[in-house]
Length: 163
Image 1 (cartoon, one colour):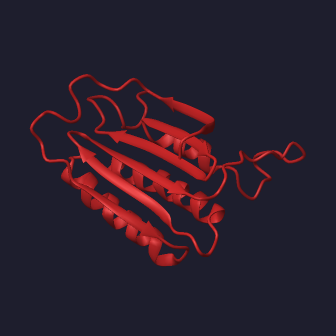
Image 2: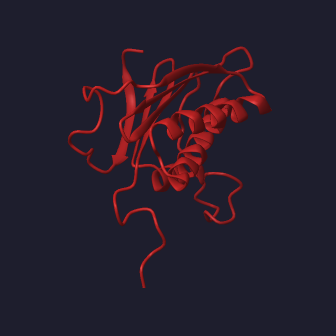
């Protein structure tokens, strides 16, 4: 994976002082997932375990699991039957990072003849962008990688809007 052919990055600036080097053990797990119902379940269980250890709120854990499930679903669509999808989940002080890598090729959906509401798919990327604090899509000559990060909401974040 040496050449990047396309790269999209969206997110909020990272908070200073959060991350490695603070004396905390960083829980992490690597998974190789194949196309099957157990893959999604395993991803969600491992995400929940690490996110709980990193003190993510119930809402933040739900958002992260949903966003990562969307990324995994896209990766499994792009992966052939002979290839698995590589997942790396890393916890850090107050945040969880997820990296999903496949051997497929990222192609943003283009459906000019259909409205977004009529389309069968195409909502996963906007959903990821809305649910996590940072998301990055990288397309390489031999695959695609999605990285995302979810932090513990600061005071006043993550609740219903005030009226």
